[in-house]
Amino acid sequence: MRDNALSIAGLLHKQVGGPRDEQLRRANCAYQLCTSRGIKPAELQSVLKLLEVNRTRLRQGELKAGLIAFSSLTKPEELPVDATPNDIAVWTIVSRVLLNLDETMTKS
Image 1 (cartoon, helix red, strand yellow):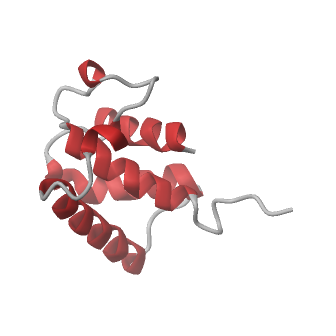
Image 2: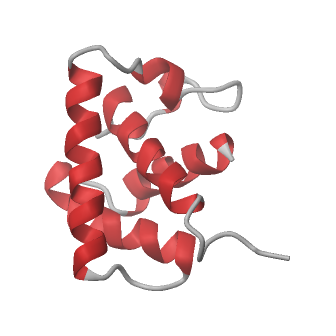
């Protein structure tokens, strides 16, 4: 699941590039990738809050971006040009949450 979330975070920065102002488009794209539908307004607010809280935690050092944003499959030198480790880490966190939603999981 971690590698899937990392892949989604990287993809969001490559396909929906640009500054953090693009977070609304990235949130919608992430929801589309994980649930096959667009994001609803209440869900968008939850994602934006998740982004804000975890950006703060990363900035304050409570979370370590390198431990979240990189794995044996992803290296710092492979970051998209406009992305920082904190950017990839925060979108990896969001992607993990979305991948764990009930509607994303296959139930038997």
